[in-house]
Amino acid sequence: MKSIMNSVTFILKPLSPFRLDLTVWVLRRSPDNLLDSWDGTTYRRTLVLQGKTTNVAVRQTGTPASPALQVTLLAPHIDNYMTVEAAAVLERMLGLRVDLSGFYDLAARDRNLSVLAERFRGIRPPRFPTLFEGFANAIACQQLTLTFGIQLINRLVDTFGPSFSASADATHAFPRPEDVAESDPAAFRALGFSRRKGETLIELAHAMLDGRLDQETLGTLDDEASLRTLCSLRGIGRWSAEYILLRTLGRINVFPGDDVGAQKNLQRWLQLAETPDYQAVQNLLVGWQPYAGLIYFHLLLDRLAAAGHFH
Image 1 (cartoon, rainbow, N blue to C red):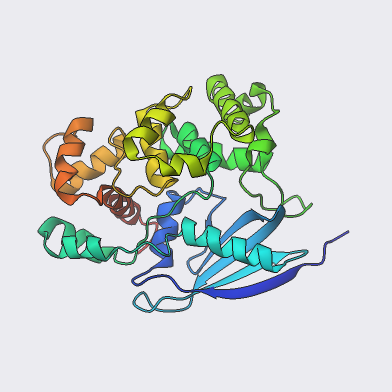
Image 2 (tube, helix red, strand yellow):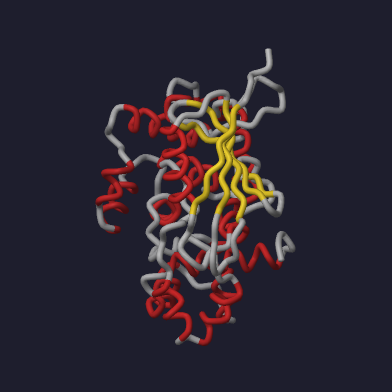
């Protein structure tokens, strides 16, 4: 039996400037990303809101200088609590309330940065909506190409994520810790994850469910303490920890210095003779702090644009 769907539409007002297309591409990272769908005008994703799987569609109706987002929720039942949660999740995911005026002031005084900042003016620092999603993305991409890492995430979502409907082509939300905690590591092997990565995801899911690992608590720690806590977890090294700090906790001063792709992006941008190692990356970016993570996102967009994924 087909479920009867209800919809609710509301408006969000990001701080200016804002461009949905650029922000979504930083969130997606690859055209192969099936969870974060983008058709050129509308961003779509399935989220679990108040325990209910909900389809979310976002369109930009205002200009970058005077931005407005039209958000539509689709589900069998929608209440005010779902709408409030959706607004909060989207504000965090799309960086709608992040004030970047200091970044643009810095860029205006710097020849290298000004060109990059103006080219992608309106990008916001996106974040994974949950700590578990941040961990899963970091683990999936460890020592692999981004393309293959995204494919692993697609399979993880299709296998474990709550379904929006019972149809064969239904979209799925990202798995929650409770969706994977009781799984056998062999199930992850079947998706292409190593056994160790599967075991790490299961351990992290249990740690979150029993309260040993909590996003809110982690978010209260400074960068150094957060890194120590994250690196103490099995299967989480410096790259993964910095990736989570930037992409989940919103620490836009953090540039994951072990990221090989980011190192090469930095080399191209600054026309360096050699690819910088971790310490060289930190030294190069010190003059642009506290916005090193924003530069990481801008350089990612630069490579996506060069590959023809958007104009």
